Image (cartoon, rainbow, N blue to C red; front, side, top):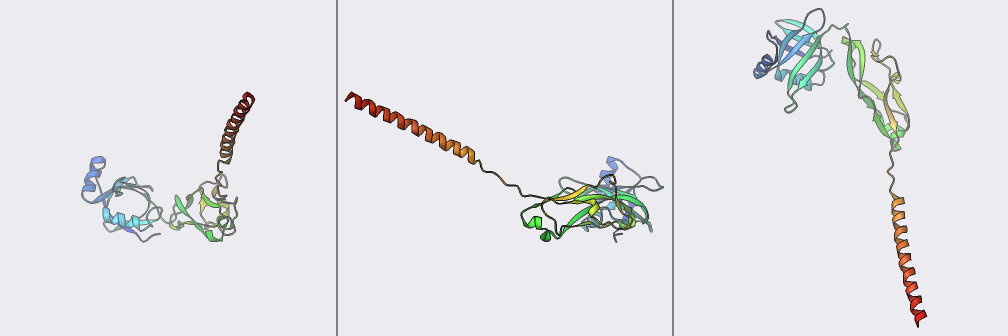
Length: 225
């Protein structure tokens, strides 16, 4: 669980007009849902929310909401950003407790690239999945999945079965051993040598024809003499 605490206000109004009014006041509108209670419209100070997002411990981590002295643990599920200013426009939060089993996207980190013979020989790391969705208790969400590339050669692959996950945590895809990354061979660009050869032969052929024509003319002049 992260140490992020977000003071929130509860909003009575909802809809586009109410959301715009909330933003004009320096807040970001949001929705709190999940659990036994119904959805609730909330508002979070824009600068406070941005600080939480930039901490790197916001999405897919348990955080605490505080309202009128009461606290509620939640999982931030989604943040919508303005495509121009990159300011947060809306946030969705899901009610949980530490034992709640939830599905979250966890980032994949690759370690020891310098110890992979395949990469040393010019191979390339082909990342198939930058994140993996895991089913886990809300209080035990791993910060990342670590993939050790030590000893991998060109043509080797890393599957989810190669990763040791903490106890009680499993991938949501359980019907196949999906690939996370591969070590691919370097691509070699072939030069169009054949085309150059054909062009040279054509030029030589033309020169040969001209030479033969010139010899024919010389022979004709000799016969007249």
